[in-house]
View 1 (cartoon, rainbow, N blue to C red):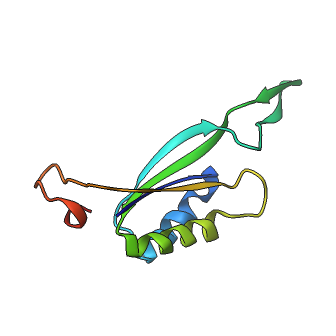
View 2 (cartoon, helix red, strand yellow):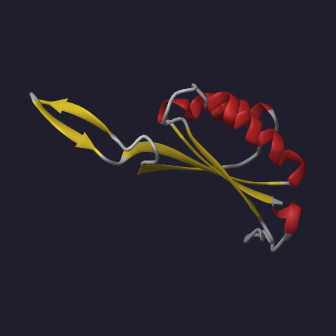
Amino acid sequence: MQFITAIIKPNKLIPVHEALMQIGVEGMTVTEVKGYGRQKGHSEIYRGAEYQVIFVPKIKIEIAAEAKLSEKIIETIIAEAGTGRIGDGKVFVQSLSEVIRIRTGEKGQMAL
């Protein structure tokens, strides 16, 4: 099992979600986050005054998946969220040693 975390642009959430549903992803957690990487924020003008936006709004998607589906999930996120421009985001993949469904006590892949 693997735990996939993707940080993407907010306007890419719907296309990514729809594509993930088509490949069989049954659940995910989505969080609005702020941060920066190489992009280092950007400048905006508000009421004639320029100011720096250091922490850029992003969306964090978290998915626990079987190992055999994780590569397809990663490929789908990259294909749908990528624009080729700075700030597209990142995908982090971690091994997941255990999953337990609270309601039933099921463990492992049965809990996904």
